[in-house]
Length: 550
Image 1 (cartoon, rainbow, N blue to C red):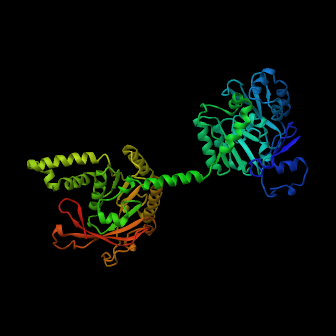
Image 2: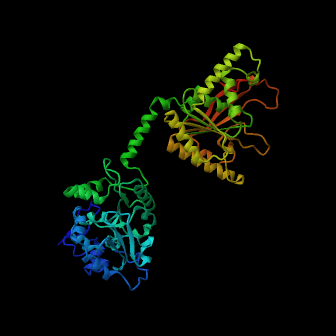
Image 3: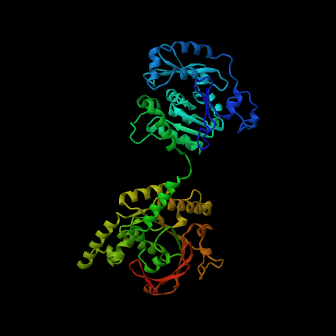
């Protein structure tokens, strides 16, 4: 008596099997082959398909006759081992499983229907096993139990499990499947062997190692794999065989419940998960922590709507770009916003001295003066305490071997350390980031910009990046800032959420009083804001900072 699954919404649509196990079950093409029907009349037939195993020269000698003898040696005690998982003797007969008096014998039948090697496993100690037969067919590429089922399930669905005995309860339910001896063998299973299978339910033992191997195989194989996940309350080291033995008649219902919950190993998040992520991010962006991501300059914060995304600022040499961003970074850290400052220009000591000078309103010369008056010494001591506390939130990194992966680890660490959802990353400067080859600086900068985009999207980090400006042929810089003013990368316009230019309004060769030096900040390109002049910034000399003006 044959049963056929006709639900078009089922993964097993078109699958047939014999209730008496007279022939192995399968899908339409297998039915056509055993029924002597012209394959061209069967759904899904492709005359150009190549099948694994057809190119192998199989030897004449095989274990087929021995398997008959092993099957006859199955004792009542051995059959009881299988009966506790409700496995009938017909299943053992179909898969040609036997017993040699001490070990269970699992024949590894090849695509041509013959067996050349068998795995002999102790029924009580699965780690006690050996291979019997032609050692060539015990090699990694042939360690696949019930191989003929692959062709039987062409264009259909197939189970892939860990351990031959774990396949048997599924076969008892009438489900098709194959098995690897242990999960580690998944590493050697070529996904092309399953090329013509439409859906693979991958179900391994409930161990960390097995689950890691399953994810690795699913990654290599792609969307057709659906990993069956154990319920959360399931004990570690559980197996399908144990589940069948403990569940009894409820096993079938449990299996199909888990199948409904199995998800395709997809490169995309589930629609439910995607919407949940969107809602969580929206709630975060509506919260206080997101709104507090500001630089401390009111007009700049209004023009940029806060410090979010990738913000690149170019400027001429000695325009004060580093001092400007150090001031923003230290002000944010004072407000307990975690900041990573990647410095390739000044060094930690100079950065800390400049912050201390601005906090204490003392010049660097005064800070270093051992004869500092008492009141100023007290002010310095208080500022040092402020700086010390600030450094829990501000981390300065000078590592010239920096990589994107190292940056990700830094961000993860600082977020965890400060229990914050957001991190601000300052890069001083884009053109000093490490490259493998200085001759490839242009492509290196563009590569880093791609990485910054990925980190922004993955980790929600905001960036403040210093860039250089391009000189004109006459050696001067543009007096009218625009997107083409940036040096060395055509991708800044594509990568930056906001591109700015810090334009000097003073002549570096003139005897201008430092306190009168002013820069204009221009927003030259933005994804969401209107470009234009932002504000003017007067140098707060000699305290290494700026004051925002009109």
